[in-house]
Image (cartoon, rainbow, N blue to C red):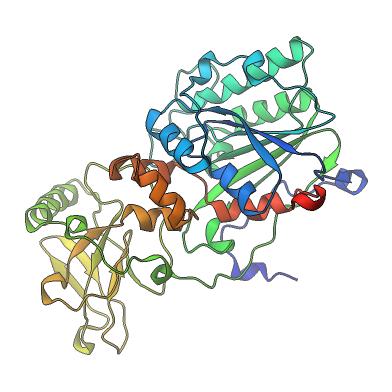
Length: 401
């Protein structure tokens, strides 16, 4: 029995209904043809590969040329960029569903839903990036109207705000549309920190099954890793913020304080967990930066040190261990020069916190800049969470698993 009191952000709002007791549990016995809309670098494919599923990269739709470059480098494919607004039913070529299980994923943009965005919503016809969800409706409708074969399984990922107060009407319309096609929907919010990854990343996931099937989302597991497990041994000086930039932060902090806004960092030890990896920097430079206190002597324990308006809260303790202020991470450094320094998370550390292997990170880095890697990792899905969910699809393909 799981003690849910020990797990935060574990929501089971739509976990089960009375009808689930009469539904057949979902299982996959046929080879999977994976169709990834809004594919990014293919984290869904990474998860299927990691659990040993028999699948093929059937169709990939990704508009960003840098993301598709990462996808092809990691997966050994040669897909071109594709605009979701120009994709039609025949482009997906779904056929032979008696021989194959089609898994269509659609992690559509969260730009207009997340608290980090403009929250312009995802209404149909709104013209927002998040409104691209309805392109999926158009494609599925084309398949139905053309008497084509619908994919047996749909998989959605987005921020929890997708079913928040501002967007619940659109979300319910989406659920209703899928139900009208014959899909049974299961959605739930899962946090990566409850599935083995030291990152506080809460996301909404939904499976839609064509037919009357049941599905159980995976139960949380104890977290055994901490930030220190993701850190690089050596970090290049270029990831450290210069004194000039620090003065800029201080100036910005002063302005924000005058406006009544906050500009601070939450201090965390290397034995803590990371904040959510984001896809972009804020103009104030506050995201993806961490303040490193270096060695802290016992006389400083529990005190708050303010340097030019940037708060550095020291974690109490009696050992001279490095303390970290979120949202960045830092390893122990002995150099006097680096004490009380600030640096960015490296792309590799971001990738590791998203569940991407070092081997795949190397492949992505070979075709992309650090700027693009930061963006891609922040926009993606934690691989470990998907592994847990995909395992509960009961994939049993004979000797292939």
